[in-house]
Amino acid sequence: MIAQEFKSVRIADGGKLQFATNVNTELRNEYLFSAMMGTLEIGTNSNKIATGVTVSLVFAERGGTTSSFDPDRFALGAVLMGTTTMHCPEIP
Image (cartoon, rainbow, N blue to C red; front, side, top):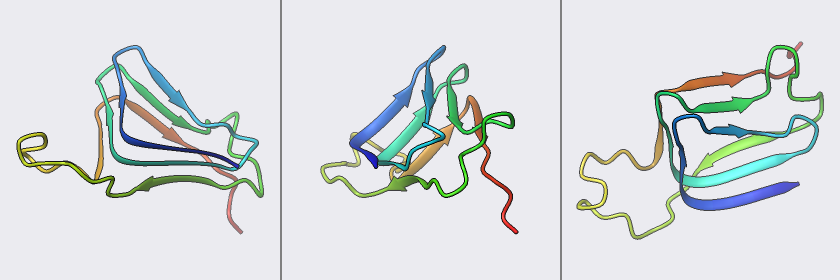
């Protein structure tokens, strides 16, 4: 299991967050942001998450988020303005 924990994750223009497709992974964060030219990839049509592999994207309160830091209250959650792809095996 590959597990990572962050307060927030920002995928900048030209950046890419790509999950492994052949190993269990988990990303725990409070807030995920993708810029217009950023990419979030959790498997592709030609490289799906493998059968039996679990991928988790968990939005969890990390503490310390104030109304001055997040006045529009986007946390907990994601604002994905760029390309987002998610592909897994077909579930019977």
